[in-house]
Image (cartoon, rainbow, N blue to C red; front, side, top):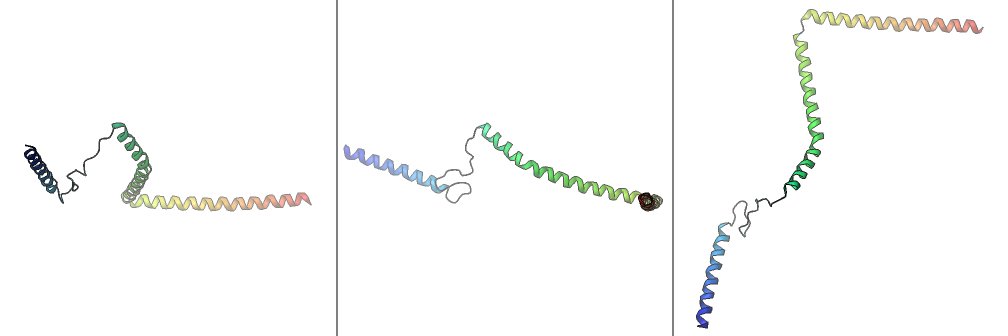
Length: 131
């Protein structure tokens, strides 16, 4: 009886071993599984707070890049808008703007030259007073 018990337990162990071996071989070279049939893509359970902290940290690190991207995008959009406005201006408006620019430039040149003359006159008066 003892030998029969050992024999049946041996066959039972052999049967279990073959079933386990077949199961493991079924996952061999399959995407996402290791050689023992464990799913490598399965995420371990994490507490919600830990995930939330990681998300907050990632968001904090990404904010400067997001801000820079938005500023660049807005700048490009503003430049495009300015180009559209210039294209929309009629020729008369362009002429008027150019003439106003010339007038302001001439006015500035005159005021600088008058200031230079005023300084020279004041220097001469001061020199005359010192003599």
